[in-house]
Length: 119
Image 1 (cartoon, rainbow, N blue to C red):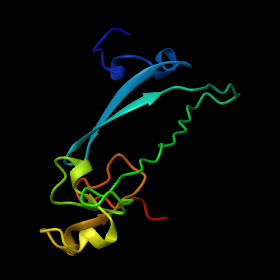
Image 2: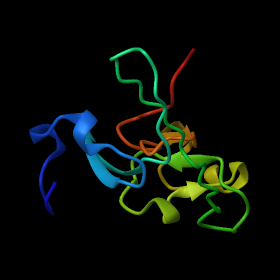
Image 3: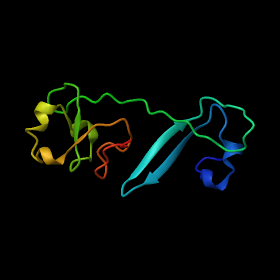
Image 4: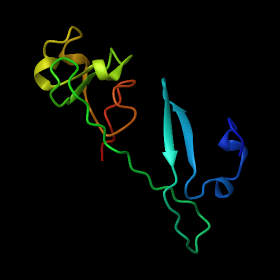
């Protein structure tokens, strides 16, 4: 696969091997670009492909006081490091508490009202 080629032009089984690092873009109103790495392979009898993934949780610091951030302003998502807040500072933010979303372990945190999966 060459530089800038789209994976959709290739068979996944031919391209995703241990050590391959690639980007994936998806869009639910705002594009999210993920950088992914294949860290291992599992051989089995099935010809089905299973993808196992885990996000490394990001520890955000409050943009106002530096404490651990727990909330993100859904209206100010232009620079996530400046729009994440601890509970105390979120109450003082100009957009109001109604604009705050919980920080979840997802690259979509704060985008398009994303609040994480509900199981």
